[in-house]
Structure formats: C-alpha cells, structure tokens
Image (tube, rainbow, N blue to C red; front, side):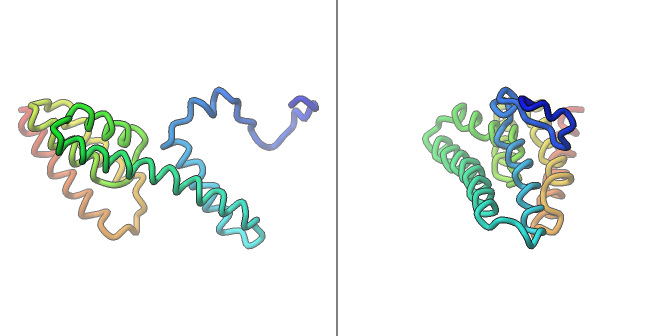
Length: 156
C-alpha cells in the first residue's frame, strides 16, 4: 500500500486485526493455508514446517488448558477450571473435554442456561468444524445431542 499498489490481489491484515484474532481464528486461518501448502507440490518445506509448528503450539495451549482445568477441578477450584474450559470453547477447541466438563459442572450447579449454551456449541462444533472423517465424531455428536435434548426437557 505504501508503494501505491492499490490493485493488490490480496488483503493486507492490519496489526489491530492480528492482535484481535483469537487463537481459534488464527488456528482456522493457518490450518486452511497449511492445507493449501500441503496440496501444492511446489510449496516451500520451511514454510510448511513453520505452519505445522504454529498449529502445534496452539493445539498444545488448548490441551494444557484442559489438563490444568482437570487439576483445578481435583483441587476444588471449579471456578478457575470453568474459565479455562470456557476459553477453549470460545476458541472452538475441537475435542470434547471442555464441553463435557462444562456441561457437567453447570448441571451440578443448577445453571441450566449455561449447560444448554455449552451443549449447543458442542453440537454446532461437531456438526460444522470437526473433521468429518474423525473416528469418534458421530459418537460424540450423538452424545451431545442427547444430552442437549435432556437439558431442554429439564427447562420445560
């Protein structure tokens, strides 16, 4: 843009947009680009490796939040565990753990609206985000749908 290239075929991302991007959003963007790189036989290996490492770093953050949440639950620090699990579902972590734990915690606390919100998000995620060929995808999706149905019946 500084050089006057107004007709650039790509969109420059502002620093504000990069700072505002969540790990979940970044993961989706990087994963799409990584997939394109893998399909192109002329892709630079170093760039592929850079994307793989960045994706792995985000995945590790999600897993570490879940592990810390488990530890906090065992210590009786449920509210701190909730914050970690909520952060993972906000970023659309595609594993079932934070959704399952939050649904159980909210159910035990009698927070039906929060339980339903989490279960709806889990159903949406397993229908729209989780890799279709993943082994346990349909089992997890069915589990969340049944649990959501049960929670909705409680509401009535």
